[in-house]
Length: 115
Image 1: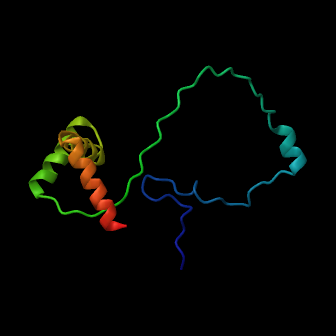
Image 2 (image 1 turned 45 degrees about the horizontal axis):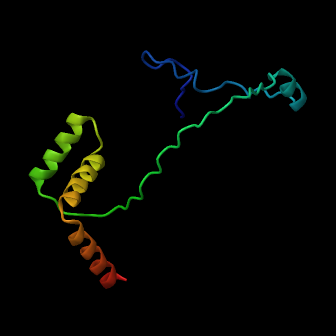
Image 3 (image 1 turned 180 degrees about the horizontal axis):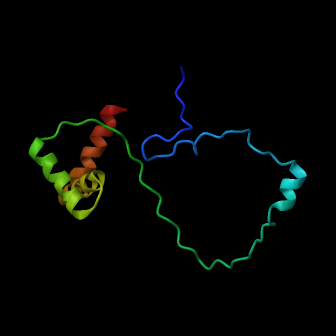
């Protein structure tokens, strides 16, 4: 025997979710006549600022010290940021702290050996 969902169950009325009859369809001409015509307004755009293009990101798996991860999550929570944003900021600061020549040489060598 199937359940009858049209009756009241507790304090919620589920019968409004289940239609009793077929949906009413209107002919295309009648439906077109009842819709309001769209009004398009010309808006003058004055040098709208371009949104910055998001940097490409890659999903990768790393092992991280449990306490450092807890700290990063806590900082993200406290600053109302995404965990990814905290990682990006921290890695950016680390890379900026290294001498430019060292970073450039590391990138060149890595590229040579991985391609």
